Length: 347
Image (cartoon, rainbow, N blue to C red):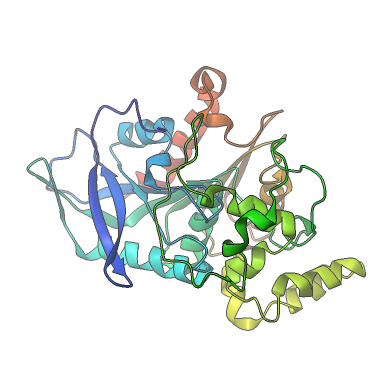
């Protein structure tokens, strides 16, 4: 587990319920210095898993520890997973999480935690960083800072999302057999999938769910954006694919996005009001292409947004969770801490 060497046990809180009462949780870590009298600057983390799997247990220890050392609270949040949810449901979860923190106090070991909603940073690993970008777009007041850790969402208008793959393309893993996962593929022949917000990712052991391969399968088939937007008919991916096939322009791709889904594409929302952003990405990442962070960084600079890009040479996806990561990349992790301090600790 990514948080296994954190001394403090988190407080688990349900911030909303969906459907027939299914709770969606977050874990709260508070600094030892918390008196309960003040509102705390807070770092909110969203987990990876392709938006299809994962849970709040995936928060990296290096990020929790560095956030707490700043005197900040740290929250790791679950959110609804695709499918049956869509990106629109995830946006709603993010907004509901912020609303919950604005209105509620949480008892922690006979102390009271209150979030300072004017001093929140959002971050996430892999697809969790995509959630952080959505938070930057859709919550008010806006986060003070965003940190994307090898995250997609910086450019959803690339062929990676819509071209069918015929050879291994992600971290050396073999292609997935679609026939074995027909119940996860629209039109869902076995009926609608049940809602969920918590699918543990197991590293080095037998899988506990079939969901963790879903993001790779949808990318393999070139249909990821259909599940992300919730639009299968007509297929948004097919519309994009036709534009790529005729070497169409980026403007044609943008024009093909239905108005109701434009709110899910971070690259369309970058302007001078976007929060200060740090992007960290390995240059050898095959799960989320580094060009996504490169593209978002260029858009941020064009909009005169404070932005930093940390490119980690020669490393794959999830490099920060590998054994020995602290010794190898501790200085880069410290750069994230410094960025958070710069933007969160000013009242």
